[in-house]
Image (cartoon, rainbow, N blue to C red; front, side, top):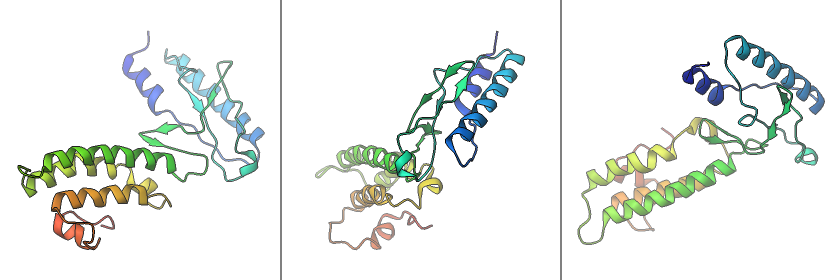
Length: 192
């Protein structure tokens, strides 16, 4: 019987990657790697799950955008997922992180609504409480894995929501220049 801790590690954090010129080379190499992993698991009395394992491919060749890899694990073909989630980051074929940033912006919008309720109009919390709440609720989500997606063309989606967060903290209006928001809210600018 395999230990639950070993199974968890195997299911969540095993990732294989390779680079090749053709899809056939990729499929052959990854199937070979999966066979070696299955042998390793058998040796340590672990059982990898083909149902929970997915394959994906990253490239910029638009003609082949719908190509699904034929990779097998223990004789079963792995499901192809064009948008796999790895350690909380949604990946896509071109690694533009658009889907991930759209999801993050949606989360931030919902959390900004909570922060807006906390700010209130007649009884709102003080600035320090709002700042602490914003850092915990919004910035923890908005900055998660930022070094991975920070150079994406879609970061504006998250920036707009974080600017809204700073406006809620400071109580400033829309005409306030963006460079002043980090100063007024006492939160480091994204460049830092």
